[in-house]
Length: 192
Image (cartoon, rainbow, N blue to C red; front, side):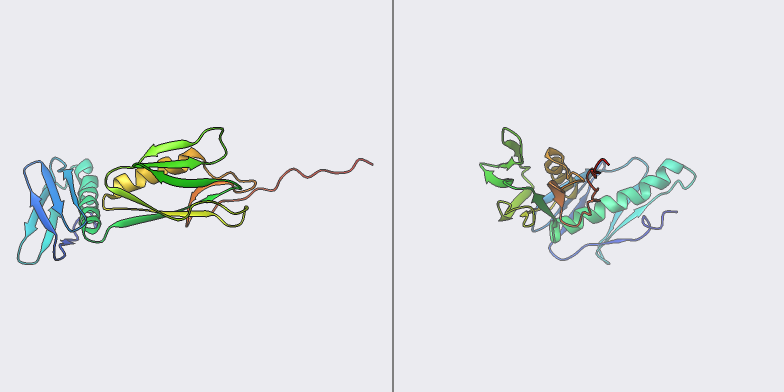
């Protein structure tokens, strides 16, 4: 039995959970998220204890054992997202690199001959703290916030993919908590 899967998910105040035949829908102050129920996994709502209970009736199937914990994690992320929300802090390093938001798009100038535009998902908001870098030491800072963890993570990965951090000077887009391993450049020796 999955150790994660057997933990119940607490339902905070202000959050409602609708458990249909094929879809589980969670609504809260930040928004609404839904997920398809995995076949063979049972999802029940305990109204008295204000909990979602996920169970696996067929312990012999190895796929269902894996899906048991996965389904519980999806539900936990949905409940957390609509009640508290998620955020990803990001940084851009590199002289002259900048970020701005225009008409529902994020516009990145990161060393290419053209600016890169990415459409912002409806569930994600972008907060720009420092729009442009100042030298190689002061990065541009921005935060992505949203209630859908999957969409937020996907959008953050797409932004990072535009200019991943390179190992020599550290230029590029990275997560705020990301550690970039730096390499030493070529060492020139004098002939003698």
